[in-house]
Length: 197
Length: 114
Ligand SMILES: Nc1nc2c(ncn2[C@@H]2O[C@H](COP(=O)(O)OP(=O)(O)O)[C@@H](O)[C@H]2O)c(=O)[nH]1
Ligand SMILES: [Mg+2]
Image 1 (spheres, protein in one colour):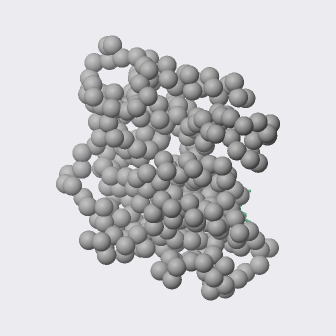
Image 2: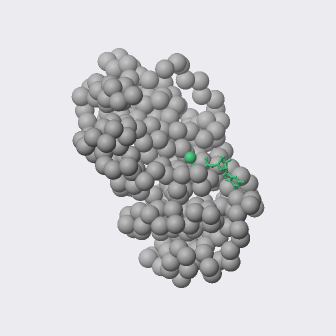
Image 3: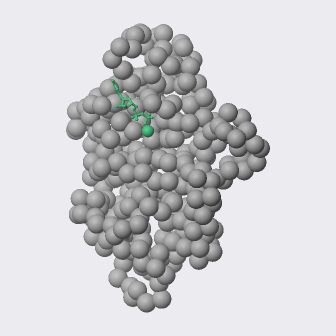
């Protein structure tokens, strides 16, 4: 644990007094960390929270019942707009961390769910976890090259998306493309907040 | 591996002075700035938290945790104590901005980037 050397750019400008938390959710390997890095103005950071979990099923290598300790790691990035700092948190993709989402979702205004068309089935439990927490969300297909392209209608149907849920396409490695996907989410959140107001 | 993680949990307990809950409501994106206040009497871990905070620009709880390699739950407890003692504060907005306006500011900013 050496000394920490932060530069001025690591701090928010003095004008920033508000923060917004959004989640970037999706299964392992879908491009969450890449997406957060594309949008972030700071080098993406990582937090690790030690947790005690009741070990069950496939993740328990020893096959023994009982409690084990592990850490939930989250990468996050930041982007400042005027007086507001937007924080994007990549959710841990592993199945066994889904119960940890209560804490993750606390204070989040919404989620961008990344999906990979080669493994659409993996999106189901993520969508359920997001819906269970009552988070507003949009879905973005991270288009890997070599992956077959499907029309939006087919993807909507495969994911059983509600008509009001936005669906968009992105390349998580590309800043502009990632920002466009975020715009789709924030437009959706803004429209939702306006309906409540 | 298992042993080491258990030790981490014990360490987290020790460095928060045995507190297991923060004294105030705080989340990962709660913003914090340093305030002028005497450092006497502060525990080393509290000083470490203060050491990365600035009077000029805020950092979130999550950033403090990442820079110090501490669990966010530990930073939350330490930072809440430092707020109680006047060493840290949440930056005060000029007016109470409703959530919808905060979202719109983000949206405007995002649109300027594409
Ligand atoms: N071809 C391609 N590769 C990508 C894309 N997004 C991410 N990757 C790669 O896919 C791998 C997994 O991405 P990562 O962001 O770590 O996924 P995470 O597990 O969801 O955080 C990495 O090797 C990335 O470089 C993409 O849009 N296209
Ligand atoms: Mg990742």
